Length: 512
RNA sequence: GCGGCCGUAGUCUAGCCUGGAUAGGAUGGGGGCCUGCCACGCCCCAGACCCGGGUUCAAAUCCCGGCGGCCGCACCA
Image (cartoon, rainbow, N blue to C red; front, side, top):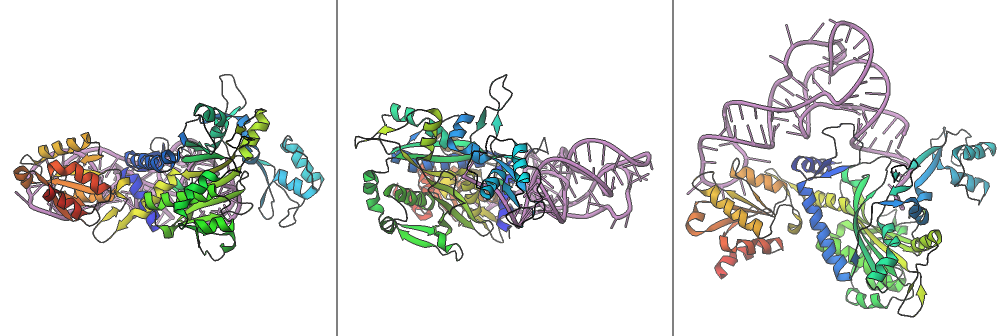
């Protein structure tokens, strides 16, 4: 069942939300790269802004921007080198694949470092020790295949070997720049860095358009804190104590039962570890529900278990969203990375990254990271907004996220109506709205076109406008119209986008 | 990456099996006429055989390879 999915993808390509890169000119272009068209880009900007206004600035986070390309050393310290450059060997009988270093370590009980060995040496070890397939017991292996899940680059005109890589997460940039940022901002723990940025993963098989891409965008918060001092967050949690966070606990995997746990319960039972993590779990869920408009019953935190968690994570919850077509899809990676990253960089760089705290002791900060997959958020906004009936197709996007905020039409293409409509359009643009003007075809067709891209308001200039300077103001969801005076229009648009009802809009004129 | 299915305008599709002349239609798009509020109608225009090779007098059609898509497995740090 992919009905809505297919329709949303079709609509997105057709109307300029997003489409596959380079397809027009070079049909064989590799998959997993997408262009954001004008409408998709607008939504993206709006969501970034909402994130910034809700989770960055009020939390005192400092937004920085670090390079996409980082030296290989960085990824040696972060553990990505080890975990991203897999060497796999496949059993020819049952077609199960194994990481060859793990296979050898586990079968022979060797602890020594196998990373430096060549493929030939590793294969020789497997064959000489007659290591059998742990799954089916066969002794029939393929050659070793290299899997690079990071894109490597050779920096410098004369470089021949890759000496850098495109980052697979923005985190490492923040960790590497933590100390400098802390210093220049005269920081104190907890200290939060924020990054909006593109990340790159050489996925084996990119699929489902924006759901799994090779180049995508993350909204990440990197919260550095003193694990021994939670006082600040204890305070911040007070108003949230009865807020319910939705979890899929590890033991409920089979049944899918969601546990609604209040902040208080999370703390008391220790399930959510500490006040800081608890606060952020609640905060991020609230952001998705209240600001981005995702219904609560479609959201849950899936607790990851050993083997699913990232190599760096002590605890890890994926915030997931449910749609009928795609099932539960991860939107936010919430990882308690402990001091894994900071320590890794201390080890590889031999620099001291510990900082002084108010307690008067130096600590190596721990890190908690809510990391939002922006493209997936946009895609799900579209999926959840899609509506159709016998008459029309429309996107019931949250009004403040719609890419076109208000469209202006002349009822007819004569009698001076287009001229007046263009004036009104100009005024709205000057007021800072994302306005849109159209005079082609019939009025009904123009309404349909705007419905399809989720434009919340259509304003129409008719003959009455020329007499009393009022226009019709149409609501996307009900198709109802009220008349508004042109002078009140900017105010009406602003209020409607912020959530006012159509009745409130129509009473504007009578108040004035 | 493996296996199965598939690839004709932006989208949907006819033609392919059985090779043959300007690749047809719908929808969408642009322009025009019309139109006093929800995809009216009419006229005009632009737009496609995934890429490469092979077989053939001749390939959208047959064969091979590549690329891409969907589904399943694996991967998803």
